[in-house]
Image (tube, rainbow, N blue to C red):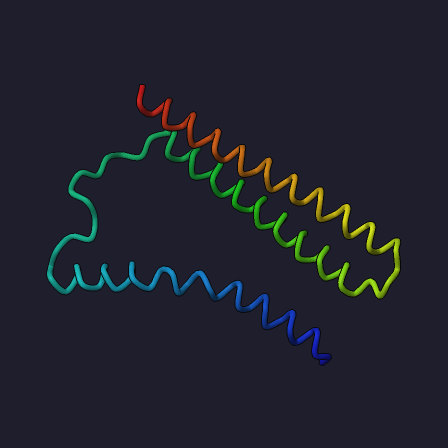
Length: 124
């Protein structure tokens, strides 16, 4: 296997494994609650409403779109680096990066609007 293929494989695996480290404290705190015979949930839990479900679906959808656009930016950057001076490839990669950044900005704005509206609807 070539070096660049190994580097890409290691990078992708690292990106898939990295989020697990951020959840380590949560798992440890839950284990501590189990050992102390304390409930690991809030005593003030309520039944999930329709807005909770819709909010979760919208959040997952926007997160997936954000991931796709981020991967698109990385791919375009890789294409730009490997263009080897070919002006056509560089211009296509440049256009792809610009479009992907605009897409990410739209997704962030949509998420901000969704959170704002969701808080307004739930508070009514």
